[in-house]
Amino acid sequence: MHASSRISKFLFNSSLNINAMKHFIAVLYGSALCFLFAFQQQNNKNITKPADLSDFSRQDTGKIASHFYLTRFSYTPETWARLMKNPEDRRVAANKYIESVGGKLHGFWYAFGAYDGYCIWEAPDNVSMAAVGLAITGGGALSKFETTPLLTVEETLDALRRAQKVGYRQPGT
Amino acid sequence: MALYLTRFSYTPETWARLTKNPEDRREAARKYIESVGGKLHGFWYAFGSYDGYNLWEAPDNASMAAVAIAISGGAALSKFETIPLLTVEETLDALRRAQTVGYRPPGA
Image (cartoon, rainbow over all chains, first blue to last red; front, side, top):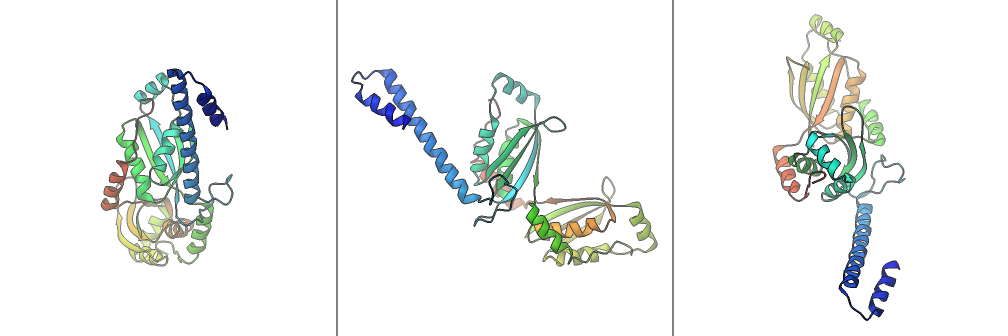
């Protein structure tokens, strides 16, 4: 509505100056971005259908199977220096990378301690997750980058039930 | 089916028991992985940070976790870590897909 009122204002304005033209293009670009974002959100719905959005750790029951991964990473000193000069929300970048392989970013945090940051994301399979991992490590901005496949609580309950049938016996007994 | 590498160490009690009663644990490992529809590909003992390594194949993460839980629950091991592996073919595929990710370093 905001965009359309701006457009009509522009159309009724007889003096066609370059600033108005720039503004019109910016508004058009903004609405295109909104559309793109909505489209991507729609696509995500097809990839993940969590029963409860507040609990993304639930196993996806949609048609496309997907897996959760935890990535622990650290930046090189040069990367921190570059980010200091030019602060940037890297969640946007991370989201773009994982979506390029049909996955989804669930969380991204910086942290104290052994690693500079952690992210949780979902990918269709190990190969897609590896593709993102390789693209990022190939960029040379990180000093540490480790990806751990996660099991949901449901998968672990399933594993526990199957573990009962394994019939383990200690070595040498 | 996916391949997994498991790195493990026995507790001192387990080594003491095995010394008294030597046993080929490959047979046991094979039985466990086959019980979930998988396959044992290799089993080695080793010098260094871990007492042994094995390479096996399981239908999915949950089946592999079932075996890992059964083994860890037996309390004979002091270390037990399972790493999902990618084949060279899968990695080549990942490398090709990595080209389309369009990575740009932070702050660049």
